[in-house]
Structure formats: structure tokens, C-alpha cells
Image (tube, helix red, strand yellow):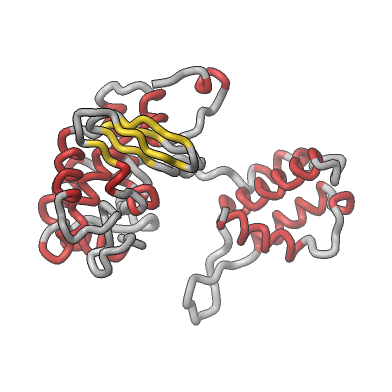
Length: 285
């Protein structure tokens, strides 16, 4: 939603003073051309901006505008959605983001865990090991608490927003995914070993992977992960050729499952993705 908020600021600034009925398809086309002609300024950049705005960024802004109009139509505040009639020639200028190949490889994985996540970066090793074997988003990892795990023989019940969820033996629950729903995930041998180690640490409060400094909820791992990559001799960053980021551990988890023949449905439910169609909706792992 935070992305929607700052993109809404762009839309309201450009279309200020207009009502829904006053925004036409041509107005949207002009907005697209204007946004494509603007240059971006990086955070703390002092020099004049030189790089033009990404067409993918504009695609997302137009997608949000279209969603707003769809909601306005439902609320009877608008009669039609001008984004639906954008000419194909204009749409071609704002393509969707192309699916990236996962930059992680078995060789990089070995270098990262054997050479990078050691010494001053060893505190990130349990977090990365756990993520490699569960595929959680960083936000889901940072919110994991002791009570979310069940390493006992009996079934455990965990309350989430007034509802009780069954957590079987050697499983844990993600109380809130990106889609707002909870999901239960089984622990493989390596993930269970990490969980046992973290839960046995007397210095940990309620969080399983706390901040190394404050022992409270961990806020970010970018700097530490980047340092571990440099130590291992691995490129780091989205804009770097062959560069990896912490989020690539989630991609790598899914890639390894696919290589092992795990079905799309199981991978979808483990990763916490929403069903894409009615068949997915009726298919459960």
C-alpha cells in the first residue's frame, strides 16, 4: 500500500482540479508521455538528474490509475475507465517488467554460505539458512516469534486476529503474509535445526531472528548481506550484472523446489501467493 500512496501523489499532482468525468483517454496518454519524458533523482543526489524514468514505473502508475477508476465506477463516481482505451502504440511504450532470471547459482550459494556469512557477518547466517529452506519474505522472517513454532509432538493452536489456526508438529505459522492471510509451513531438517538453535538462545526475546544489536525486531539486512556478498566475491544489487540480493534466497527456494519436481500448487502455497484463477482457487496442496 505504501507504493500506492506515493504513486497516488504523482497522480493527484498531475490531475489536480479534475473530476473523474473530466479525465479522458487523451489526458491519460499525455500523462504517459509526460512521465516518460521526466528524469529521476536518486536519494541524496546532488548533481542534476540525467536518467529518464523507467517505462515499467509508468506502467505501474497507469495500472493504479486504472484501479482507481474501476473502484470509482463501482461507487458510481465515474461512468467509464479511460485507461481501457489507451492505443496499443502507447501501451507498447510502457511494458510490464520482464521476468528476471534468478541470479543465484549453486556456485554462488556455496560461496555465500561458506565464505561470506562468516566472521563479522556470521550473525546473518541462521537467518539466511532459514530463508533458503522456507522462502519467506524478509518482513515475514522479521516478525517470526517463539509462539509461532511447534517443535513438540502434539498439535499446537495459535490465535491470529481472534481465530485459532492448527500448527502441526515441526511446522510454524506465518501470521500475516503479503496478501494479509496466514499460512502454515513445514520445517525441513535444516530449517528445523536453525529453529532449535534460535529458540534455545536465552538472549532472544519474543523474536526468533532479532536484531544483533538491540535484540528487538530486526529492521533490515541489506548492508550486512551486501558485505557478506563482497566478502564472498559475489556481485550484489539489482542493477549489477549477476548481482544477488537477500530476496533472491526466496527465488532460489522456489527454483530448487521446481528442480525437484514440486508442483506449482505446493510452491504457490508455501510462498504465500494468491491463486491466479478459479482452478487455482479450487486446488490445494
